[in-house]
Image (cartoon, rainbow, N blue to C red; front, side, top):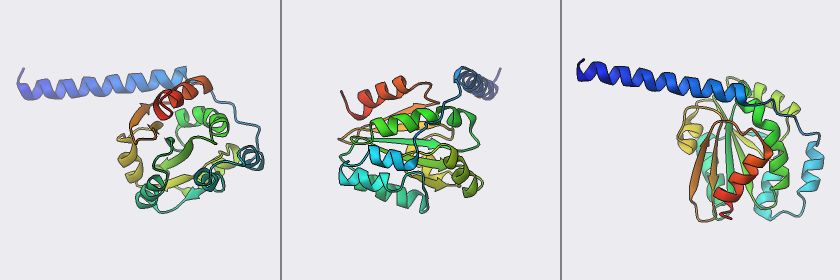
Length: 195
């Protein structure tokens, strides 16, 4: 075999492995149970949060415009605050499966951690809005149909992807869905709160 054919073969094997891992994750991810909390109950539960976090809670379940520039400005305004950024799309089954986890944890940790969504690769803003009516969250998402913001922040073309920022700006990227509240809580402690 020539070096070029070896390179093509290696690339094909890498793509097959990535697809297999993704399909196994999808099969292993149980359907997430939506929270029974309403947006009003989420906001009440999070009242008294620090002002920077209150601003996020005031935009709960909103799909915000502005793309990457608006998202970067928001992240800059939250510098020094632990953050969890979740890239998702309403058509993405693994994203849908983990959404109940994010609903619960964003309320239980929302007084100390900033949560932000990136609605990436969505063909219609209306699809995301409709999805969030069934699965409300205590934080906003930035609309990213071009996937520019999602790629820039998560360094990945796939969904879901979650990025953790600690107080000093250190990051950790988790590829794939969160199967449980406990696993997301564990990663928040480890990567955002540095416990």
